[in-house]
Every structure is written in C-alpha cells, then in structure tokens.
Image (cartoon, rainbow, N blue to C red):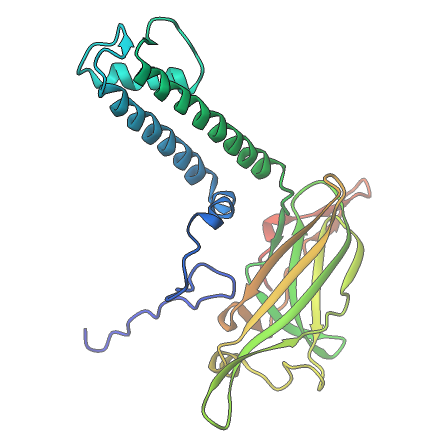
Length: 289
C-alpha cells in the first residue's frame, strides 16, 4: 500500500541457518551421520520412526510376493506381513508367524542382517547425541555501549546456566563488517575487539564481557548508523573446560547494530542477602537502565 513501509527481512547472522546456499555440491550419504547428529531431537526421533516404518513396509511387500511363504499369514493381508517384518526386525519371535519357504527364509536372513546394522547405527547416534557435552551458557539478548572510567565501552553479559564450573574459560570478540575496494568489490572483514578480561579461571555465575573503544579500537568513531551501513556484526565466542564432562565446550552469540544500545548500561543483578550470601537476579539479566 502507498505510504506503508514494508518490513525488511531479518539480517542473516554468521553461522546461522538464515543463510541460503546455492550451487553447493551435495555430499549425499557421506555426511548423513553429521546431519542426524545435528537434527533437533523431535526431528531426529521422527526420522528414526519414519525409517522404521519404511523398512518394515518394504519387507512386508516383499513377503507378500510369496503368499504361502509365511505360516499362519493370511494371503493378501498386508498387515500380517508387515507385523511379521516388525517381529523379525526386532527379533521378537512370538512363534505365531514363521517363514516356511526358501524365499521367505532368505528375506528373513537379509532383514535380520540389516536390522543388526541399523541397531548399531541407531545406538551409536543415540549415544553420541546423549554423551556429547553441551554448553548451557546464555548471553544477553542485546549489548550496550556505555562509559566506564570515562572510556566508551562495549558490554555484553554471559551466564553459566548450570550449577557447575567452566574452567579456564576464554572469550573472543570479533567485529565482522563489509568493505568496498577501489574496484567496487565488496569484501567481508574481521577485526578483533580485545576484551578487558579475556580469560577467567572459574566461570560459575556471570561474566561481564567488555571492550574499551579507545582510538586503537576498530569501533572507534563508529555509530549505530555507520555499523548498519557496513552490515556489521559483533561475534562473541566463549570456550572452556566443563568440570563435569572434563571436555571442552563452547558457546557463541552475535549482535547486529540494532541490538547494540548506545548510552545505556545493564541493570544491576548482583546483590547480597541478609545472611551475607551473594545473590544473582536472573529476571533482570537482559534489562538495561
């Protein structure tokens, strides 16, 4: 409609699935294991269930090709052959249905072999998904730029959502932005934003990640408008050793120019109770004053 500004599509973040890839060669089944590991849990379980149904339906139709090959199966009744396939694949052996012909026995042997392979793959996938160490680190949903000791400082918050320690935690902050060469070609550049404190021996509660915007900083002289014009993005990566799994974990977040608030500061979430214990109010974790 005239006079109504259409809503712009969301900016794609680095490493995010909003990026559309065209012309990328397909790896086929070579990368199927990785895809199954990275699927959301409901989708992964649905994929296993669908594969189970397809395999049993396929073998059910193959068993139907020999109407007298399965004892006590009613000829032409697909569900009899389907559930016989389920019993064979699951090695249940109720004894009501059984193969009697050579053709049926060959199919049973083939299905049992495939069933053992599928069981091994499914077990490995489930174990890998369950045992894989994951970080439960949350980041503030926005960043702020506010003076700290008279110096403009970019700040983000992070917190460990688990009640354990992340040892030797390290953080890196990077500015990604577009530049245009003299030939008119657009390139993506990355500049390190040195944190005030890049490492902490114990990450338990919260971490205020800060970068001072000094004359040497890549953010010096930048504004929200200039960062938007450069398609800028601030990337934050935390890595450390989970003391429970004794494995390296990592977490990441990114902030687009409209998610960086200038001239504001985060609300205070640390306090001390009457008993002298440290208290963290996570209900105000994302709030700014």
